[in-house]
Image (cartoon, rainbow, N blue to C red; front, top):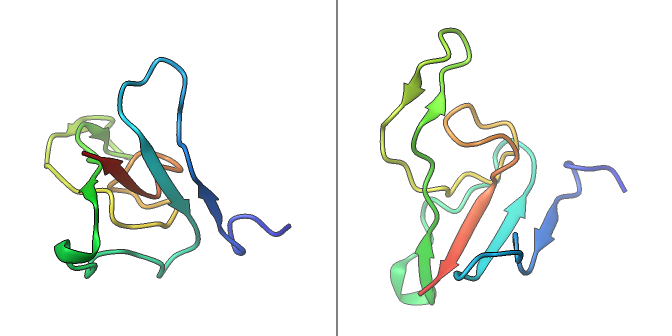
Length: 87
């Protein structure tokens, strides 16, 4: 498989010691879930807060929903992707 070009879906992301179910989609640039309406989701989006700036290393405390599936998005954790969190 050609990862991340062909993408990857993790049905259950990070199961060990977590009390919240998460599902993730990891893909290439241009794949995102920015416009998914609330009424078609059963949960919320995970967040990306405190991601270090690549040049300064200073954590960016801007609150962002993890809706960009691009594994190298500079404003999300490395390989975070789009992560849905079950309520």
